[in-house]
Amino acid sequence: MSLSFSEFAVRCSAQLEEDGRFSTARLYLNALRSFSGFIRHSEVQFTDLTRKRLVAYERELRYHSYCPNTISTYMRMLRAIYNKGVDAGLAPFVHRLFHDVYTGIDISRRRALDFKDLKTLICGRTEKPTLRRTQKICASLYGLCGMSFVDFMNVDFSTVKGRVLTYNRHKTGTSISISVMKRTMKLIGDIKVQRSDMRTFKGYRLYQSRLRRFNSSISRLVLSLGITSRVSSYTLRHSWATAALRRHVPIELISAALGHRSIRTTQIYLGGFSAAEIGAANSKVCRYLEAGQS
Image 1: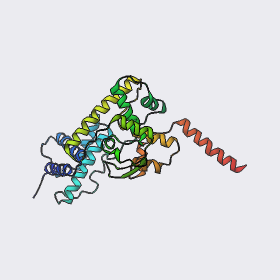
Image 2 (image 1 turned 135 degrees about the vertical axis):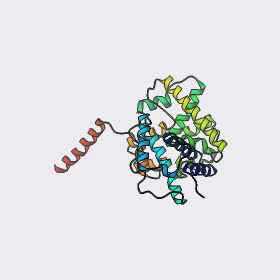
Image 3 (image 1 turned 90 degrees about the vertical axis):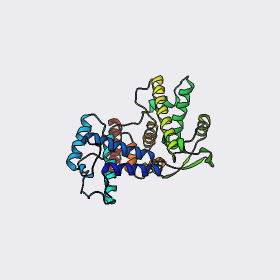
Image 4 (image 1 turned 180 degrees about the horizontal axis):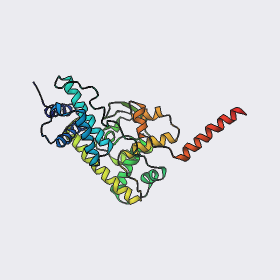
């Protein structure tokens, strides 16, 4: 049976939903809608995806000021659907079909807070109960080795034994074991986290709603504390990774704490070093050489 790219994409999305991968399922459909709008056809065929047309599509997205990571997400979703179509015998294999479009990850937009803003976010004084709760969640995420918000909403903290929490990351399924400090457990107890069962569509929608409310509350919190940097739920994760690097924690250990499958992914989280820091490191290395010569 022959299927169009659009029909096959919808089937792939439905299968992902059955597997509990609701976020990826939604991204498949978002990418399909975007590309369909670009070619001005409601029904996309596999033959509509050509190297020339994909380059033009990327150019159009950039013209409309889409950020590099959004462009990459759309391209990677289209590529995933196409490759599945090839495996299913619905489309011909085209060598390096997506080679000329952007499918990487833009690391130029640093999302880690500096020490001053990070301390203000977690320790700054705020009077509103709702903002204090948001602040406690921020402190908890940071205290749990930069745990992602989706895992924070999904983890069963009653399973902590001997101050050790073991859980599987929702995104990758990677198993992580971390030591939980007393003050972090107290914060979690104060927050009274209500778990979201991400295996169901209802649970996924509930998580999405909570994430939107949390990010909205963070925006109000940073405004009240006088922080000018843009902050979201993932900022705590990036900030923890960068702070760990600043404290000379090996990148391999940082990667394990974050539950990453590769060091490359961890490097994306790490903020860059200033010229002064690089200069100080250079001086230290040069002095080491000079000391060896004397």
